[in-house]
Length: 204
Image 1 (tube, rainbow, N blue to C red):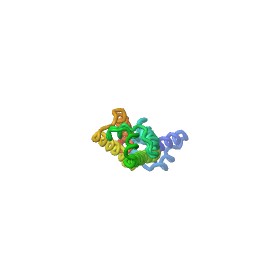
Image 2: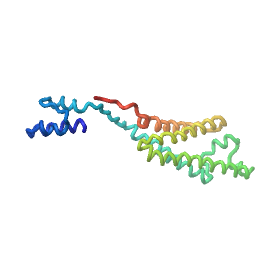
Image 3: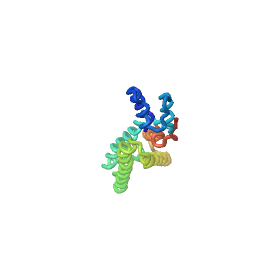
Image 4: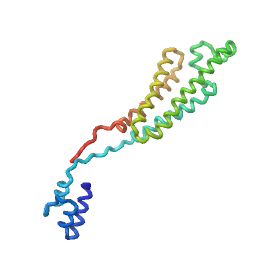
């Protein structure tokens, strides 16, 4: 029986003029002529847990991961089709235009196309978990969903580090990748307390 329920029943029975007999049926610890407020406190000394209020940025952080997943899914399509919309990085490494590479070494160009499709599969592997998990278990605040989504920023960091090590990546593409990484990390860190709340606050 909760604190609130006891107070309501005490008020009701007092108004009926038969408070003593009926309240004793509610709780045997009732003391006649004791003020109702003190009575309610005496019969319910169990500490109450203050519920945690979910903040707006915690509630909606899943949208950041979902949107990046959609962008990654869209970006994977041309790679899977063997179409490189921005070959700046590759041309910077090989030192020639892709059209010239295709004309001079068709077999190596086929290998390059194979590489492009692998990149498309990588984007697809990033997109699908972000979309599915973020819109379901992560949105609901299930703790397990927080862990697998960390694989994606790790992959982003690996890609950026590799591109910086090889060279040839344009500053605009690098800035875009860094921006995506930062937004994704925000989507993971902003709702941290939603998945790992502090110890519950008790009040008496």
